[in-house]
Amino acid sequence: LMLRSWTIGYATNVDEGDYLLQGREILLGHWPHKDVHLNKPPLVSFVAFPFFLISDIPIIPVRIFMIVVSSSSLIAIYMIGRMLGSEKAGLLAAGLLAFDPFSAIWAKSLHVSTLAPTLGLWSIAWLMVGIRKDCRISLILAGLFASLCLMNKQTGVVVFAVWFILYL
View (cartoon, rainbow, N blue to C red):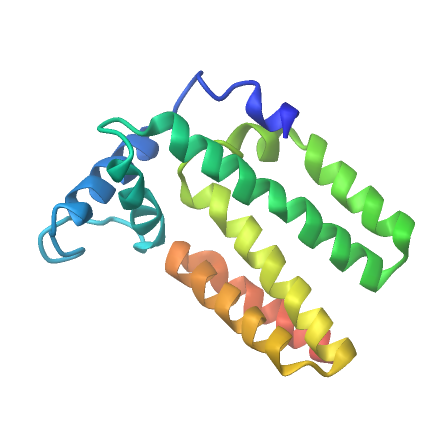
């Protein structure tokens, strides 16, 4: 969390402001794709709107939330590595992701590139738990995270290719 948090007050992505504005418009009662122009799937804008209940300019609360959410991907990739290999493989995978510069820098941003890998990893992790333990709830969670991944970014469809490979 510290590595991902140390730049919380610095830099921004052009899209981050756009998502915040879209979230504010949704909170004001405007409909996505009807009253509010969305150039990407709507999930990130829906994530943004509740933060306007906290503040008129909620950049720091949104970034704290995004850091927590994106850091959860470390748990998901650890689970995947442990299930596919061993405890050491899970720790290595989580360590590599934790110190990946792209992942660490984007971790704070309200952006599709922050949520997509996190949602995709959780979808795959829950799918693997569901397959290994024959647990329907895990499979439902896998589908939920895959659906959220698609609501976030069109390339989330790749998650389903990974599902197919895991079923083989």
